[in-house]
Image (cartoon, rainbow, N blue to C red; front, side, top):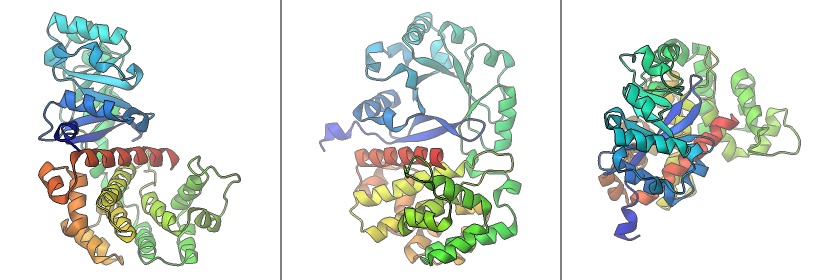
Length: 388
């Protein structure tokens, strides 16, 4: 890849936007520390490949820091019904900018104001508001002025999401998935022991009958497994009704992978989806994809996938990671990655958690490859969330 081609792929992070049921509804493109011009970077990425198709049915929220310099021709090739243009509140104070943005709404694009803009938001044709509601809520009139959906950012807990939902927000972003309520987190001690036992069986490649015995003891996990194999993802001619059939359909390797993810699929007591599920899917899929880019062997790829999935088990089970790995028969490389972010797997896990250009170069991964693996991971996570 030439230097000019490589420059099209800055390091950017995709952040999920959820509704009140913890279901993904949109993705935002956020810059890393060295991403440069965020708007131009995002635009280049979206036009480089079939990104929007990969993200179906989610919308894409693009940051436009300088809307005065935006021209409609720059948006050619981007479907208006899939794109939300996010502009800072301070930038819409000028009348020419208001008129320009209003023209884009007539072309079908949706405008989201980042912050409080008052009447300027209405004059710009804005439909929604983005607001950092982590500590305070905007005035009621700010939300009533536009139809929405309004996005509450920097959400740190589901309790705060509930408070913002009552105030009129319906979209939410932040790391709330990593801070679940403790009373909902690990269920009871019996359930946690059963999960650890199942993880142990998976780790040592136990006999299918042993897996079936534990599955029957966990109604939630059993339900999700049967739902999965009967979903459109497998397109079977006849429905599957037993665990033995499910195991035969998936095969040992795929069964292990899906069960590792299905551990996150339990609905919470309030009926909401577990927000950790798609995050675990993203980590697992990108870890494997990065391993493939480095020409790793199949066993190494399996360990990369496991590392990504298991990296959130401490959050899921509300247990120290040291206790979790002590209860499982994991490869030493996986243990090093989970406990200390050590070894080759640990280095990849750090890249998945927080991309860093210098670390990528040291690992022999160029920005274009990283973007491709990130894209694959989110595409797969979206499919997983819809099929489970």
